[in-house]
Image 1: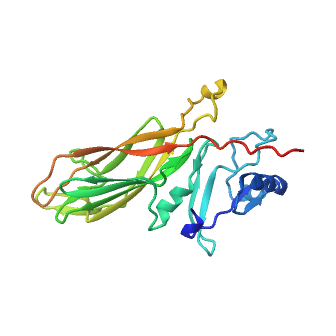
Image 2 (image 1 turned 120 degrees about the vertical axis):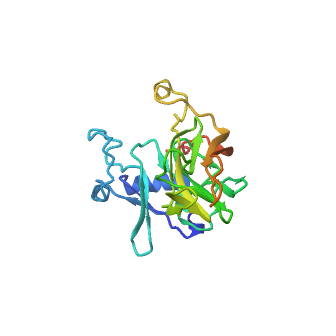
Image 3 (image 1 turned 180 degrees about the vertical axis):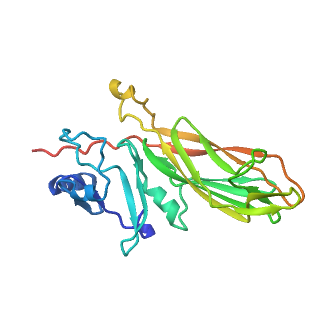
Length: 269
């Protein structure tokens, strides 16, 4: 998926070459896996996972889970690292954020009197603990605007939120709105006109890979299968002469939660 969109992947871990070679062969890994024994590069980049105690022989030296997106000349375009080993950024979120024509997973279209909108998840299937991207596109009819932030309390700021037991963290990043004097209201407010594109993140909560009592004390197991992720688009559309009441449009996006990847079969000694 990455390579087809012009992005070449590589990984770096604190494992030895021998371990990486066995892992790569067992799971048919096709991208380069770089060995950083002693975590020298990991430390130099400031991504050493400090949650792991130094006396933990198996895991000490690992990096935080995350990724860098580099340009061909080595400039870091984006850096995403999560502060918990149970969570992982998904490759699909890189594509939705940075590849113009990437279609993503499921897309839902919303129509209202003054605007049309679409909500797209970066993938239509995921594993527990993965972080996906979500894109919101809004097209306004000529003469109409909606509101951005900051905004007085008596107006509705444009927002997109999700409500699901599967989601434990979410955020949306809207572009900077235009500050515009609205003569009919006698106020200068933050507005969007024409088209708007916002990008956000949805983090699917972590789930134990199997029903184990001590793990289920931390989080309940997510049953693999198809789920409906509920969401709400909020906005208030106004023109130079009329201001509509705030609207809340509810919707649901299908998403499949996959079962964990089983361990590779052991080769006979």
